[in-house]
Image 1: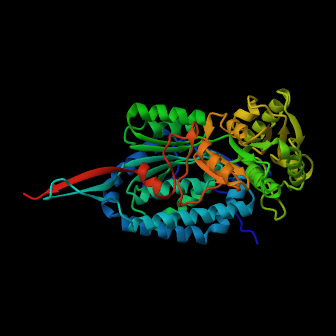
Image 2 (image 1 turned 60 degrees about the vertical axis):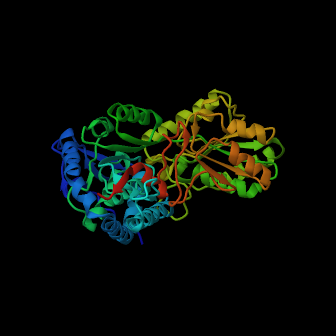
Image 3 (image 1 turned 120 degrees about the vertical axis):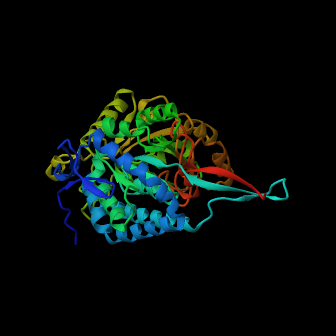
Length: 488
């Protein structure tokens, strides 16, 4: 039985109060399956942003002094509240950005697990004792929070990504100003409601919705901001980096990928096909770690291609709330148009479309942004569809003579987020691990996916080098003090 998602207006959350914008304007969140409004969020101004940053600034000292264990307990409470609302929030996510309900529930469950993981950080060490050359001295390190952290998140994972940024920021003693992508801001507002109900002190977590040009840029440029973490497009990420570097504040960026999968001549082809489809077409390909290029050794190319097309023909596309649907719509009209544009680019540059690629019409399809996932072959490495992140259900098949050439082709991109290989040969596995230029390396598994306790991040243009999730998050959200004590 499905829950009823109420269509209402959500306010900003500033200094523990739900406050409407002085603009009097709202942003409508649209269901990509039928173009119906599912809710409204504030089109905020600099006034609300300034209030949020000031609230976080005023709260940071008391929040730091509260202690890590107490901060962790509040995250435990938030996890329990989110768990009690998992069905409601998952359905909201499906209605707001299109992914199927099982995927939305899985993402929400991951958010709960992340909260509990970082709640446990409240009882773990925050420094190390270091031997001193002075026998009468004690020397140790201590982790200290950065202060006010700005968090800007995308629409494709509206529960997991905000939580994997907010949870470590808070448990390590920072206060937060959170700006979600407008396309998924209703889901984000419901997540913030869980934090609000958990009883965090005033000003610790603040939530402001609005345009990137006003709220996003205003947050980055704010003089009382101490750090910024951003997940989104490369172009916006570069502007974030420039602004943060100019002010000398800490910044963390995750900016997408063009993720390759290599299929060797001794791979389990049925396994490879299943994982490639999951990696390339789940969530309509709208993942930064989605499989985009599939590089296949010539000896098994035709067999793999046939199996991949046959499996793709079985994919059901429709409203993500329906039980028999495997892939939902594109998340927005913008993503829908981007998909169509890249299909035409691929054709015009000489790639051969061997499956899908069309807009679905008739019946419920006429009311939403539905497309058939696409597979291209005869793709050369310099083609646009082999170089640019599409962020849609498009796979480019590329032949390779051998593993050496396959790895060279896989690395032939400015991105380096994730990569995987399918093989039963241990030597190939070891060579791939050493030579591939990616921050996430997966063997006989889809390119998309990382466990919450493990570091996540990319190389090259995919990232600034820092890592999210797991213990690695501590490196970004804290600074190290070295303490030397000697008796008088």
